[in-house]
Image 1 (tube, rainbow, N blue to C red):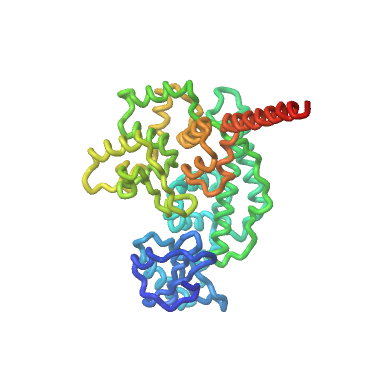
Image 2 (cartoon, helix red, strand yellow):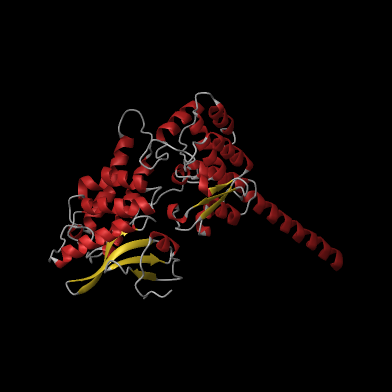
Length: 416
């Protein structure tokens, strides 16, 4: 389908079925609401926009990410925005079209609701905490146009310096080390970069991205995973009666699948096939915007089948909870309580993902296979496990060296 097309009567099922273009973007026009378009990227992201000329310039004004069932809301919003523009409103301060004039905090709040929650379900809460804890107090009230590189460079340094001060302060050592402040500072920089890039695309902000040129701190690669001598304590704590069933099952599935916490929380029965021993994570919930196929090992299959026996009829979630989404949304308290019972420290839930991959590497599994199991698109991402996978390399080198030595002995025999 070309990027220019005849108007189409939008329906949610039709828009769900639209395939992404091989490259570039695809724009579909609604036949019912003038100016309403669906913007489809080559990665499969779908966004409602209002196409209008503002001050003589064609603009594709951001409305909302397509969630599969929000066409009616998008049409209503398009009509409201068209009415405002027809009445001569410049929408100054409305981040939908005047991102450059809006305060960063106002723009972020709209970004969270309209983009991050639909497209970043596993990370938007962390984005919210990072912004509210570090960015909003310093830059939240500044218009985007007023934020300069020097402001961001100062905030970047300030976050790292506060962490260093906590480490150096007298008294009990903090749980997080000095390097954690540098990682937080770098994540802040990354988040602001995303916000300014989105502002350039969705609004009339046409300034530079002020995060460009701010050098990130060097981060040491975290190599923590469950060690062999820690495994007995780990599984004993899981089997202890003090560990709730949901906590045990969630941890075990994290260990046996290597899946990210956010994907596990939003795991649906419809996406799991115990017959095929496969869990399909939908594209809209992955970091790569592509479906991610997770093979289920026998212990994971057995666990899922047991949970299915006690699942409430009609409940779509494997880990339901009394939350707005209907599924588990937090695991911090349960994880902390489990670590205390197991007598383990400095182990994050995400380290379970590294544990599966690291033990695969120790067993001699190729990095390509490990990468496929973790849903990595780039081999570079999986290279972090290369140093663990040295035994097969050593065996191969020893085999080659032995062949060379045998060849050398043969040669000497020939030359005698």
